[in-house]
Image 1 (cartoon, rainbow, N blue to C red):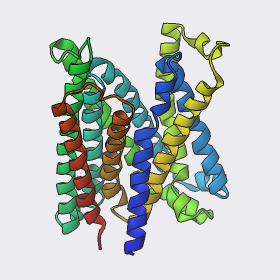
Image 2 (image 1 turned 180 degrees about the vertical axis):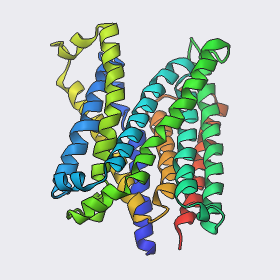
Image 3 (image 1 turned 90 degrees about the vertical axis):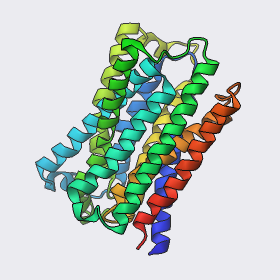
Image 4 (image 1 turned 45 degrees about the horizontal axis):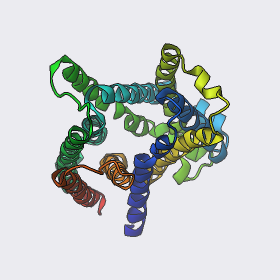
Length: 341
């Protein structure tokens, strides 16, 4: 049992690492605008790969889908669409308050709501047990780590940017509201997983292995989320007249490969989370989600340091960053105790 728990936690953490790493190719595609890269990434990561995996790993996929109640399918799709809205708002938040602050606010809310609400709604009796206390303590530590990372990121932006993010005025407060709503909506991807258990049972009955039982949930949820992401990309492509950038002859083929790779890394990150959370049992989605979010932040900060994003920042800013990462590592240990027998 302990070995299975360790493997499940390892899958969740590996998924978080991939999610925190997926955007790296964007640094190598300066000739493409954000909407060009994001559209190709969305097609690969939210449509092509999820349905290819579902078709490859779920025997009699059509029967499993048709056998599920329409209300369950609708819940998964609606929550997926909500996550897509949150993903779109994330991009808008970055424009208003900066990358570091947006990242911290959104993931902080997402980590908390994405794990706590399923516990309160589905298993409230677990809240005041040893497992529940371990989870609540871990969530508090996650939030502390996120705050430290936010302070570090904001200090770095203020130190390195000639046009530092202005933390005042109507623009900031509007950006703060956008980030809060982004965090709330982004947590809905975990709700799709939690409330889609009937789909898991249908895929198992159809012959899917337990490790692959979540693939139909992801295919439905991410397809719904694609509508919001792609819709915003199309809006920007029209507004900025950047459709033609995709077909320019001087654009290397590696741009297409890089955007597709982003989608693959992102999707397999969420797929591994689903596999690990399933193996963690009844509290899998509750325990696994904050670990997944924490590892996401750790990976993003580490890659930022490796790629030179912190070059020129003060020692104090770097100290805040590594302190935040250290606190998140502690949080990973504390929350993992909630899954111990």
